[in-house]
Image 1 (cartoon, rainbow over the protein chains, first blue to last red):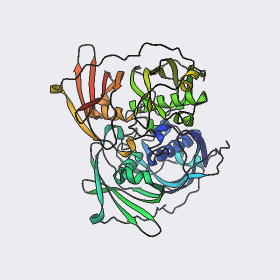
Image 2 (tube, helix red, strand yellow):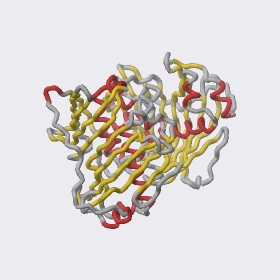
Image 3 (tube, helix red, strand yellow):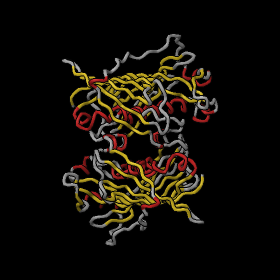
Length: 254
Length: 254
């Protein structure tokens, strides 16, 4: 296994465990995103920036959105994969990062996407400028342009369906906010087992707009749009009437 | 790191990721149990019995119960740990396995417990005798005695509290049944953030009696018993009036 490990690019091997896979035997979306957080943490750690270094700044990295693609061919529980990440660019408030999951020979790119990170003061729960010492080691280019993700259309409520979820204690992570990956279970679960077993995700855009807090009641609303050449689902996570997360997924038949 | 890897005993190193830890920064119980499933899968795989070998028998390993202890000192997100397992004994229908999680020097035993496995025909969803070729390679002793876990007292409903949960699509695992680890989130969540942040689990017994199916509504009921020298919580998972899982936990102040 030939792994890249440098300032900008970092790869690690990973054995897909059964608890990272869903009923289809392939990794669940929430676990793919969790694995991506793991490889970006490992990249920081490889460059000498461990959890303690980050926590000493009083802040933490927060993801504001993802956009990417999945291959129709997906790995299965027990398979070895490579998880990879690249620090693409940054400016005072935003850092753009690329992620991938491939087979051990870099032949099949199972997942490939970009994520936008901001840095948040964890006490005041508001944005802070990215501490220089947490970004310069990645040696990624400074780009003043603000990174943007694809626009997501608003769903029309008359053809939507919804399901409610209570935020549970174990949805909260070490940063004391709802773990990013949990949103994917809320987003996808309302589609139902029948849909999820017969369709496979090939594209996604997700934007986190407002934080969901512990003990909140979450409404996850979606709409499926069937066009001749594509099947799309649009999603909203709403708390107390306010949109917290919006997402769009594209599907193919399994 | 000095790892044991033999027919009976198998250890693997593991880096604790943020998504295996809860709000306290320490591994959540459901993730500890998931990691233990991972090391027992790795043990099978190390002895040449991979997922395909097991699936070819038409059955799968199912856990009927756990009993064990946790050290007051627990590892933190980003720590390296050793996950270990030993094939203790078996008979026609039961296999007994020991599990541990220690620091990299085997000095602190963070978790230590036993689990009872049975083998289930996954189509008929009933017990089958353990296939010889899946057990003999572990070279563990044949013991005709049926392994037993500590008795759990019935909770008295007049002092109990409860919370309901709908089984979600992503609670279902590759064996097409509710993932064992999910039960721990249902069992513990009703205790609430306040209790879980100020108390630490030191002992547990859990018995799975009936399978919980997809789309079921689960009631998780508990009762806290405060005695001079110990704090205990007793739990039941009930579906349609039938007890599916019972558990008892012992706690200390954090």
